Length: 508
Ligand SMILES: NC(=O)C1=CN([C@@H]2O[C@H](COP(=O)(O)OP(=O)(O)OC[C@H]3O[C@@H](n4cnc5c(N)ncnc54)[C@H](OP(=O)(O)O)[C@@H]3O)[C@@H](O)[C@H]2O)C=CC1
Ligand SMILES: O=C1O[C@H](COP(=O)(O)O)[C@@H](O)[C@H](O)[C@H]1O
Image (cartoon, rainbow, N blue to C red; front, side, top):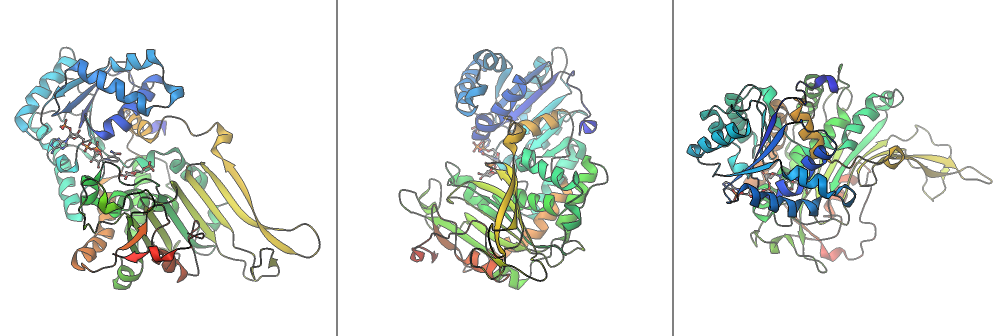
């Protein structure tokens, strides 16, 4: 990966964060920057300039971040001296980023931070509501802040649908070259997502099995045990499809399904991702009706229902859960279903990919657990928590006869010293500082993904009565998502086995 990096850590560097008073900045960006600083992985000379409408002086902003950062960095990483040293690199400028004329102040502030002249090695991070994503780059251009070595990181969601994503891409390409644009998808920054590539492409033994001949179906799950917390306003305009599926989940499908790139660099890797998106089998009427299940959490025990959350319409039909069956029309994957699901307020937080291998063509043994056949092999790639890889296979039970029991062989990241404490944001910000765009989404990938999912959004818009199933907060989602799998003789790996009261599930 090092050869993909084009900037050195010696050049003075300024990072400008738009939306610096917001949730993402305090919870993710500042802790990530602190962790890079503490590990000596930031350029020697650097400044971080927060920008927002909230009025702070530099010192007020420093004390605000000082208070907040301590809540979000791990205890073992808290070190007063380092934190104080980090905070001394922070500055703040109070402007409204929506107003072009105010960028003159930004230009002056950058000049001040650069010493004699305006610095060129500048990274703009857009941590604002998405409504500003199309506005800020144009204002930067007006004030000639889009210099040759500047870069811009844009948060997700990049667009609201295909048309808006295309418009945004046009705006960005009128201001920056593609090499300067970093569309962030923090799932790709996760160590364990990257490990999926290592697992597949650094080992010879799995590749021959990694195709339609041996794989029966694949599950991709990214569920959470929290609700939408304070993000009601945002979530109402997004829903699970835009918040998780169009970006994170499809990215995991791509990592699982892609061909090995000839060389691991930004162009080759991202070419292979786009090929997967372009091979997704377009959804037809049957898929839209039967292979997509959307749900919304309802109040249960002490947990609020989605419609009771702050900032949410009490009659909202926004989905907080979605399960889908996807197909990939290419030689490797034709006929292999990919089942994906995500949801808020599930029983646990887990992100994992389960690859189900086909059964042996002829069974000569019986399963010890009463099944007619021993169960098929499964490979579980666990991205979080308990990061690791588990292979399930049949072994003979000790004693007489030939009863087969499924056993596991597992690797845990702990054995390699655990997943590094710097999280996905640290990894991605560092890559951007050094000019490596490999783990960021390219314009054609964003558009290819929206192109695939647009029919779902249109279908929901045009069919107001398309089912939206309620599921009690703290459960595994609508039962219909199980039924969808049964068509293939399959079931979700973490099914709601212990559910006794199915009356709680109803159509909304
Ligand atoms: N929070 C998270 O965990 C995640 C967030 N994201 C994305 O990151 C971006 C930022 O998220 P988050 O920090 O939660 O957002 P916030 O709602 O906290 O907004 C960030 C800041 O933007 C400024 N802002 C808000 N509305 C406007 C407006 N109308 N005009 C100008 N400035 C405005 C506010 O600062 P001020 O009032 O000072 O101008 C606010 O503090 C979003 O696009 C979100 O989708 C992505 C993944 C996770
Ligand atoms: O981007 C998002 O991701 C988080 C889940 O990310 P994770 O790294 O904690 O698994 C999700 O909660 C949020 O709604 C979404 O915007």
